[in-house]
Image (cartoon, rainbow, N blue to C red; front, side, top):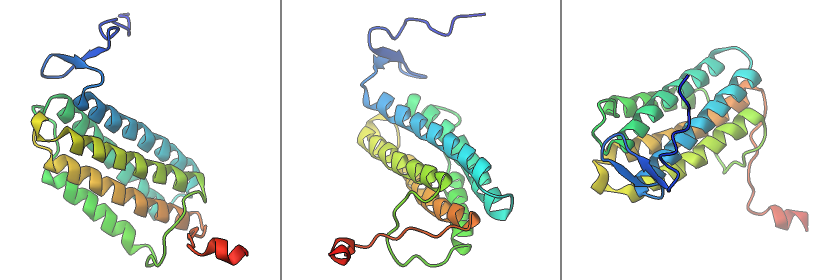
Amino acid sequence: MPRLYTGTGDRGDTGLLVGGRVSKADPRVESYGTVDELNVCVGAARVEVEEGLPPGADRDLVMASLDAVQDGLMRLAADLASGGQASVGLADADVTGLEARIDAASERLPPLRQFLLPGVTRAEAALHQCRVVCRRAERRVVALGESHGPSAIRVVFLNRISDLMFVLARLALGAQARSERPWRADRDAQRS
């Protein structure tokens, strides 16, 4: 069995899919590394959803959405690591697919009338964690800029994922028959 470790990155550089070797602090490595981190968070949220939500249409929608997101994130990471030269990159259909999932989840939810605080259930909190890691990935991809391949679809895709994670977190609470946790700006004044 071949060894997992190669030692080639021991000096702080790494190989790209296309384009040779760069510093591990290179903006391209930072961007696809953060996308990889997001993919791990989505996987952890998937476990929480599978174990925490009762079987039914809401759970099925959340699970299918998370699977689609993970597939897209793998393709996005390959795209970023190749400087836009990967044959498995994102397409407009990936964005419209996310939008359809956002709409399907939103139709199952009551209107949102206030800001929400995460932290009611493990599944809901895990989905919110995905949302904020996604926002960081989006910032990294924006910072990468056009110098490493076209980025417009990348940014839009990540933006839709964060929106999707928000509605999925709300849907998870509903599936678990739990109430949302509203934030009240005047909470300190109410305690006095």
